[in-house]
Length: 186
Image 1 (spheres, rainbow, N blue to C red):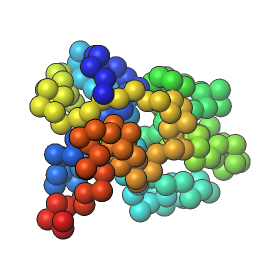
Image 2: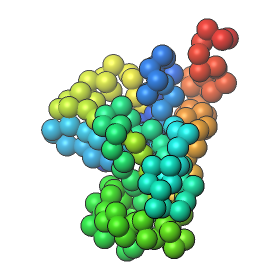
Image 3: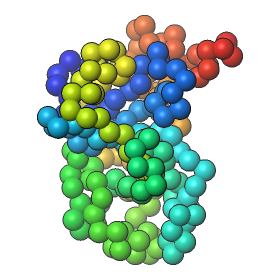
Image 4: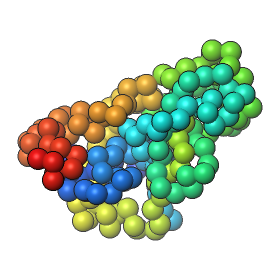
């Protein structure tokens, strides 16, 4: 665990005690922005049943769409690791970028110049108002870790990513790695 202040680029791992919350139970969130006014992140381990082509038919790709969080779920967001190809991107950290020119992005996907290891799409995002995330940290809702995967996290994370992160934490968290998502099924 990290005891330093929250900074963008870190990972927030949901504590095993978050049960019954469809968005955050067993979530791993990439913190995309954090300042005195609030925080923004994307849940990176919750794929939806949609592909990018389902939402934007002119994109000829089966890239998965992920549930980025409960805020603005009618909007599409993306992170990537190819800022040299996608203009107007905003760096999060560690070579991970947020957004950019969407017309260029569509062309790059259609031409096969970027793939699932370069880009991830989300419906919605996670957002916290001023000091809300810090209050959740103080209430032990999240474990904060550095992103040791850097920009390779885009292709790395999966539906089992939470369990992998819990196993890496070790110690008292190991018992939770094989617990059912719904404790009533135990």
